[in-house]
Image 1 (cartoon, one colour):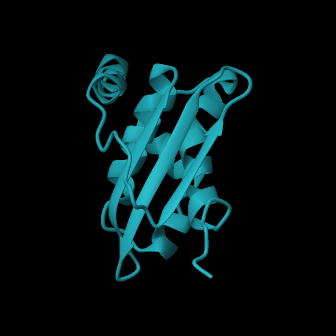
Image 2 (tube, helix red, strand yellow):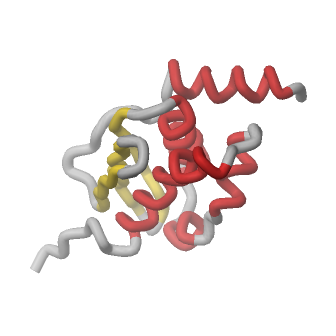
Length: 128
């Protein structure tokens, strides 16, 4: 594929994001901001039988951060929590299919940081 086609994929996810919204209630929720550029991402996840049953993201930011969140939501659909925990930054960058400059790397990886913080319990409220 050409670089133009890869850029078109990013723009399509930015203009027509998949799984955009919020889930209430959610089993896991977390949000964070990239202080360097102001990108914001919130991810909500519902789990059924130890698999991602439903996920959604919300926020605002550049095309890379928003497209990355949309792509990540597609990557996690139906996956077990262990499989999601095993997703690496390289896996997400490979799915983006465009070279990401060092300055934009935090934009591209913000959604993965937020998702993992949520499912590792940083954003999980136990029902005690």
